[in-house]
Length: 544
Image (cartoon, rainbow, N blue to C red):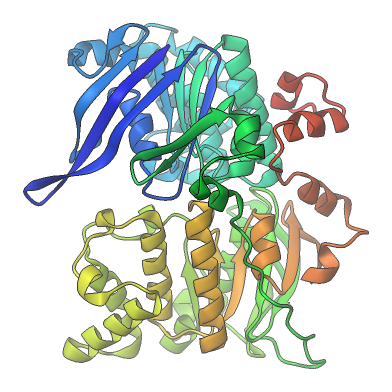
């Protein structure tokens, strides 16, 4: 189906071209899944796009060939490529929030490719879209497509993008981190759906991921990349059991970081933040119900649960972006105004946020110095040389050289570097409390481990308190002190980390813990059978 030979790609830097991919070969048959892994900057996404005969702005294919079903994609006329892309070749991007058009409803964007390629009528495509939404376990599958992208959660939007890629039943799909934004229970259903589609329609797929346990479930073969070079390639079982190269072995060994357990909280200690019996709604739709938990000084509380469980909504209530209907928020024992517009500058300063998708959280037209400098000036009143000195100090705190990064734009940084800038922007206000909203979910495991270590060091040095919103239970184990489990807008269980990972558990906590993928190619199949699902397609349509 796809044959790549000696492919080279280069990126423009000033007046010269810098190598990105250095002579890689790739073969893929119908019905086969190839996993591409490697740390951030390895060239995974660039190679995946090159398999479509495509290169981003500022990048060029300088040498080599790409054949899709006998068609030369490197030299094919634009009209030929337009006839293939979207119809026979599809792409699922990592950041659905940045990829959907915010001005159009989801279903209208879903039907565009099938209608333009003459595969289906608008009505047929809408009906097919609803069926795909059901397969991918989207809530209200007959209605959700008629919402705008900002009206659904990040995990739901990622599944809608996967459905859109499948709309024309393509021969080749490039999956670029398609489950990054998904909680573990939803991830299982989406992985089952993808495997079902690949098997049912004999589709070839390239699966790009930094999650080794996920690629173990999806790929027939694994290719490891490092800085544009191929490190090694083998079938999945061989690669997992006996990798040849030291770099591959180092990938297998990541996520070793574990924070030592902190002493018990003193009885009667006043929390930094208290969420007291909070009930909240979006319009007339209730989304939080009597939520109650505390976050103490210098500690990390991990808030976990499925997409739509209310984790980020609770954070919005704490920051005042969504005033609760009932209940109240306390900061160091004093009630805070529920609406951020009624909070003074010092109250606003004390609670800051680091966002999940650094790509969409940083203004692409501002330099790194301007992005970090704005809160420095707003909260601290610094200007001129004093402001520059403070920004430089913040860049050093996040381990980025000021002289190198101050005048760069976000587009010139890697994903991990952009997330560090998000951390510096939060630190610029000198807060006592920071909300970390899925801050490592979009990062490869090596970079994510570096971010977790940085956050831990900052907590130790500055006495910060964290609310760590995540669906990654490995992250929970590595960094949290207490855990709050949420489902359907309610807290179902909470307590110290050591207790939360020891049985007995609430049934929902058991479900979350059992849904964490393992580095075993048979794990997903065995899990589905244990849950009474003999046909993986049944899991895809929710018979779990």
